[in-house]
Amino acid sequence: MATYYSLPFLGSVIGPLIGGFLVSSKGWRWTQWTIIFLTLILFALTLFMRETYKTTILHQRAADLDVPGPPEPERTPLQHMRFFITTTISRPLHMLFTEPIVGLLSLYTAFNYGLVTLFVTANPYVFSTIHHFELRAQGLSFLGLVSGCILGPILLIATDKYIYTPKLLHLKATTTARTLPPKHRLYAGMLGSLLLPLSLFAFAWLSRPSIPWIYPILTQAIFMLGALTVFVSSIIYMIDTYGPRYAASAAGANALLRYVLGAVFPLFAVVMYERLGVGWATSVLGFCAVGLGVLPWVFWRWGARLKAASAYREGE
Image 1: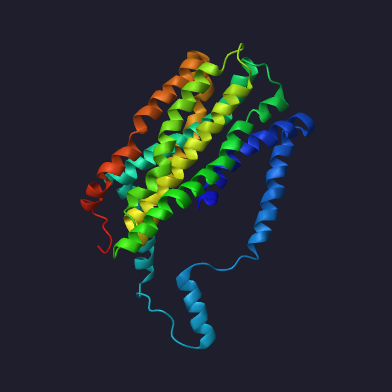
Image 2: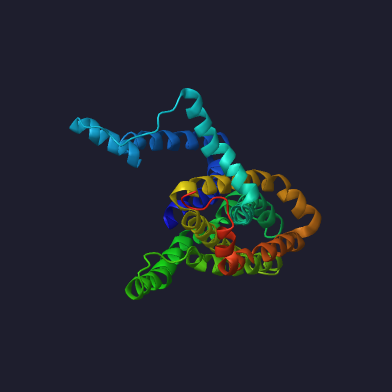
């Protein structure tokens, strides 16, 4: 899951890196042609994918064996439409605005994703105005963010292997419990909540003509590492908290807010950097990251109490 959730972040930052070289050598139209070619290749690969949805697989096996499949509730077309709207639209929106765990963690991860898309717009401005990077070098300035995307899954897997799994094995060996409380999914997120503001403040005040360009790029690697650890641990925490019945709706609410902020942040990025300067513009974002960074720690302490008061408890 660490790798799966890291890939959208990687795509967001590797695109500008490749685009800088394409535009400078082939022209801007080749950014679109490249996307079309890659899309066709990926769609072709889906033709060889197998079904993974459990209910569909069971129905296929039942049909092959000529036996009845798993029972399904009988619904009219209107009931099917109502069920679809409830599970994909109204429930995620209701959870987003009524569930503190979903709403606050979605806001935090959406803010972090918004910062990623903001840097896609702000990086060329920062490195062209301060370090006088030409177009190809502007693309290479995204290597820090790309490096963070690569390091993120490594840190998440290490956290699971050396912290979460030993605790789970110890729990199973000493008690009758089979799973750890969901808060134990927040280890990486709590670390990421510290890395995010530190990296933003470092980027803010290391982005100066007198300081080598490599230092702000390294701080962006740390930023992306923090953003990924917060995002993945938050998603898995919500999955464990709400269980198989409501986890998809919680993740849907998270995705909705995440992509809204991801679309909005680039709209004001360059204007903010022009008016406030790189130092204070990024520092404002750093102060926001400090405020939101308390959330993993809050849910570590009070998450179980909030879940007990939830209208979306497992089995209800």
